[in-house]
Amino acid sequence: MSRKLTWGAAVALVAVTASITVSLTYVYAMKNFNTKVADVNARQAMYTKLSEIDQKARQDYIGAVDETALNDGICAGYVAGLGDSQAKYLSAEKYKAYVSGNSGKNIGVGIKTARDNDGNMEVIEVMPNSPAEKSGIKKGDTIVSMDDKEIVRITYGDALNKLDGVSGSKVKFGILRRTEDAGASGGTEAKTEKLSITVTRAEYTERTITSSMINGNVAYLKISEFTDNNAEQFNTLLAQRIKEGAAGVVVDLRSNSGGSVGGMAAMLDTLLPAGNTVSYRNKAGKVTVEHTSNANEVSLPISVIVDRNTFGAAEIFASDIKDYKKGLLVGEKTAGFGTKDEVMPLSDGSAIILSVANYLTLNGNVFNGKGIDADVSKELTDAQRELLAKNQLAGEQDAQLQAAVSALIRQGANVSQAPGAAAEVPVESGAATD
Image (cartoon, rainbow, N blue to C red):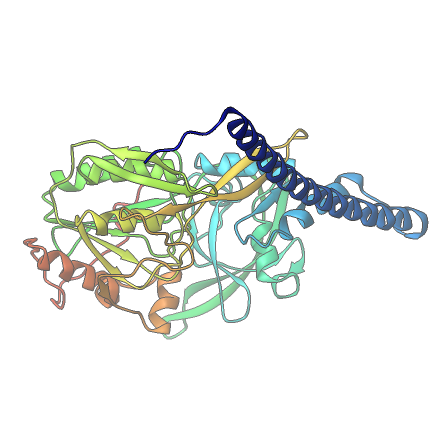
């Protein structure tokens, strides 16, 4: 049996409903208002505190206040206070260097170094046509001082930061160079020569990809960093090795610092079938596909070598190769840095970098803080790791490299020199530059 509401009852019901709605809206609005007021009060307290510090410093500080350095320090402190290890504040000068670095262009000396047992800088690579090469610095040199200050006193990290700088600026290096002279008995005698070499910083192109043919017919490509423009070089080198008869491809991403996701995605486009390659999830939970690959793909078996120092874009590369079942990962679990970092230029030419989303694997999983597991686990000894960092580890002694070749054979590659054979395995020939 149905009942009908009277007109008066209907009006009363509407009134009650409206009253409840208004009440709930009011409660929500008040809560939201109070939250905003609390946020405003907290920010006001922060500004007041900063003003107190500024007033005291300007009144009693006995040193001179550098306004630019002060403002940079305040901004850097704020970003550091966010607790985001990837977040950074870049001064106007550093932002220019950042933009230049992403394009593969750098301003500085043009060397790569490793910290030796004494805390000095051992030169492990000199970039072709760089200021360092033109000034006479050589691979194997040991830098013991910079502008007459000992490296061990200014610390290796600070010295490393001072290699790059303003174009036209000079830096003086104190260098020890090992030489061999003919001894009195007719043999050779090792000697150490002390040199002073001044280098004028200038623009140079960093070498981020080297290539060679290893184990007879395996294409080897080592990528130290992804830049906006090194995909073309990768494709050219890979095509060259395939033309030479490569039976498989080893991509070495050990100690790859990440870099340009777009440059990395352009390389994946060559290797993978059609599909999504790069996607991320933002704070609101929205998933965005950032890059895809076309249908054309390399048909050869692939092995990717990764380690604990494989970061960011390199982890996406490795993850996609794995999830598309295009190849096998060999080595160690990667670093686990998978955030999308947005660069926002500021009004004075400086910029901030903030983590605004998490990159996802092809299966939709977040790998930030977790890393990507290798399919074939293989570690180097401490001695081997040290030699690898200095580009001195011979291919036949590189357990991870040889495991990667074995992984190619496991995938069906007809490798002419199987791991363990006595043949020499070069890994530095055929080097190329962006």
